[in-house]
Amino acid sequence: MTFEYYSQLKSILDDKKISIEPKILEQYKSDNSFGFVDPKVPKCIIWPENIKDIQQIVKFANEKTISLVPLSSETPRFHGTSVPRNDNTIIIDFTKMKKILNIDVKNRGVMLEAGVNFEEYINAAKEAGLRPHLPLYPYAKKSVVGAALDREPVIIPKYHWDIADPLLCTEVVFGTGNMFRTGAAAGPGSLTQQKESGGAQKNPMGPTQFSPFRIIQGAQGTIALVNWATLKVQQAINLRKNYFITSEKLDTNFDFIYEILKYRLGDEIFILNNLNLASLLQKDEASINKMRDNLPNWIGIISITGSGSLAEDKIAWQQGDISEYATKFGVELKENLPNISDEQIRIILEEASPVPWRLKYKGGCNDIFFISTLDKTPKYKEIMWKNAEKFNSKNIGVYIQPLVQGCNVHCEFDLFYNPEDQSERSITKDTFIKCSQALINNGAFFNRPYGIWADMIYPKVQPNIIKSMQKVKNIFDPNNVLSPGALCFKEGLN
View 1 (tube, one colour):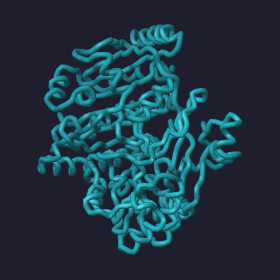
View 2 (cartoon, helix red, strand yellow):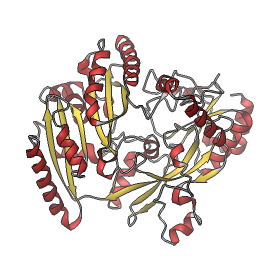
View 3 (cartoon, one colour):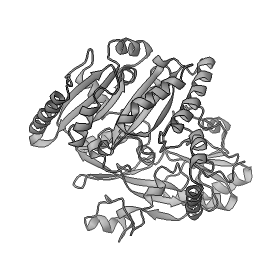
View 4 (tube, rainbow, N blue to C red):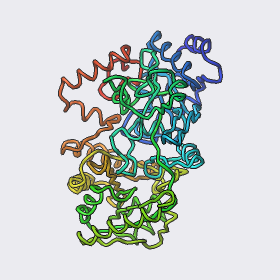
């Protein structure tokens, strides 16, 4: 960016909100993933603080044909969504937008600005007597709104009614510079008037028959910039009871898991291999290896919780039903595993991790994840292992998370590597690309196609679908200033 643009930006924004310092720009040229997007240094960083700032930036970008790439999480970041792909790019860093605008205990909803992170969110929810819907042990400095917009999987499938959950309403600025509110927040009335009349911005559908949040969520910043969002929450819990089911083969306990998902028993339910469970619970490579050596290959975690005066009763009847189905399917329910405490499990289910847990084992991780059904995951596991022949399979973590009340699952393979070892980096990158392509070719549904995945997926998509997506993009961002190059929106790259 020329100095002329910098001077013009300073005329519409405070100096403290803008930087072209080379040392600062260098920090934004890449993230902790590799293979998704090539590094590129931005021209400028802007830290907006309100909706007016966002609108001014977008209108300026349209006038000058400048690309805008949003981010809302602190480092380390992943998957290439915050990395410039254009030589003429401004990074919009939302991390200073930290306001929790509303906590509605009665209607169980929270309104957050885009920069609120999981550490801040969890603490505020606890103080209000609420229980947030969380991904598995989220990074403390990760944006809550960013995670919801990216459809990161949450760990309680029975409360996951829709693939969009826990995202509800949003206030956004489209690529045209126009502000818009989605869902119930759109009206009638202002937000103040809605609250005075008992409105809670809980319904994400609308306005009218149009539900624009569907095209904003998962769009990787290509359609709109989000100022705030409302998220659904639950009443805080008083009691928790954990069960473990273990096996040497991945699919041994699938019939039992399907049964308890069908009847919405348990709260947090997911499957890990021994490496990922140890990585969640331990702090470094030595302690992780020590724990995994004493664990079975596969561990399913089922946690039952209770709230209020009937918490014990709720846990008791769920224990009875789960035990009955365990007997029916010949599954051994374990109340503990060697050297694992209930408090350790509580922490990964309810707290935020000081560091991204996937980096604790080797220091680096490239994850491959997609949507499938539980019964197909063994097939994808075999495809993964077959195509990772040059990668040490002992360094592959697996995480399977039932979603939408068990109708499908998030299936994830984590490639752990030492980022300081160039040989490991090279093998990991090659394995990441080869395995991703093999999984896509065998029907894995990559519903979050970051970076290079988009280049693998969209050539297989019907041309009419691509054309429709581009029409939508042209309506809401006609000059392609928002995250050009992401998904199938390649025009304007240089």
